[in-house]
Image (cartoon, rainbow over all chains, first blue to last red; front, side):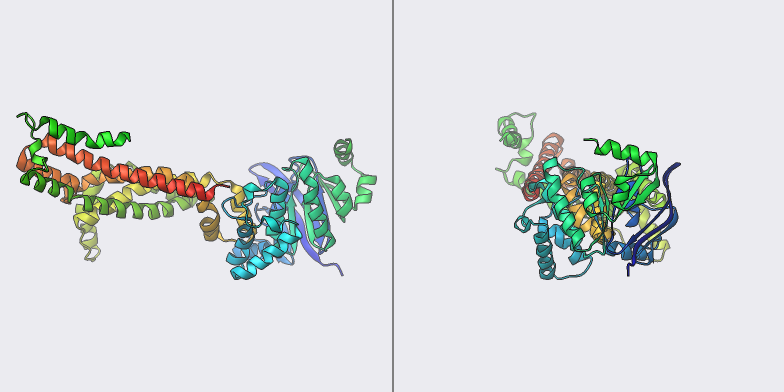
Length: 246
Length: 253
């Protein structure tokens, strides 16, 4: 009974003359966890950023929950309300407390009352295991805590899909696992997730589908056992041998 | 403490030189009746100078933001609107603009069938606000651009629209960087308000001129005038420092 949550068909994008995305076809089912990996500059972040229109694609179609992403501000607003995003640099609002970071969207964009929004915020802070930090400013938290706040901020908008753009790349090594743990929990609860990451241990544990990108193309995709066990393309083999060697 | 030395300087000059015949400090000697009347006459221009500067600054702060926003658009047409306004307004010297607004603008209004008289008070305010808005627009643009792009992106992903993103995310962070140069502009406005004297506004400079004409004591009267502006600017500086400290304490994380 799987339903298509996100569908990319023949998506192309150029930065000037530089062809960043070449005929990307990708289909993501509701509840599916997709991990996108590849060397830097391969276009993996751009794919994710196109899905919620932080970047515009120039050719092809992107559909989220059946709604096509066009220049119409309404379609952009509809899709953004269903898609949450977690950034590499967290992008928390430094002038607001943790609680205010979480309630801003629900109050201003969704029209919730302050008390409803705060209740929801505390609920999600508990889910990322830091309810005691609610009154602090982001700058007073560790990187791992900040990223968990960012995840909670996305969850407060109750998205159907969560996008992660290298969520652990800016973290000190000892903080990576606390963020990945939260992501595994989310995955176990059935959240549809698209994750750009180099954390292959995490990928093996949660991914339903592995996507390998290089030079703007999807070179290979498949279930993790197959992907890690017997990668078909030489580019993918080389990439995996480089990142799994240590 | 140093500033008090500067403030008491005219009084020292006044006391030290009152006996000498080449000096004419008696015109502003508060111990004599005429001196006191003269001082009151000069200082009573303070209200208009402050009113003109303050209203012009408020308009400029709003107008500057309205002009700055199209300059931050990713649409080239909007950026052009911003560039043309800023380059054009910035290139006009204050005095010609003042003449244009005070003597020229009413003619345009009349041609359009509008009965809007422009008195010296509002003529000065419109001119100062317009002239200054090109500079405040550039200050806003730089301040907003200094906030990382990720902040806008994060605001978009939690569903905020453009105005909400500016209002709740970008401007509160940018304001700390914008405030010091904005205060500079306010000081600039206070000083430029002296030009209002040429269209007949009875502010500080105009009153000094009028007194010089009747008393023939330019050195003493203009010295007092300079110190009147100094006091005004020092008060503004102190106010801005207080504001900055308050915001600094509030934003510390």
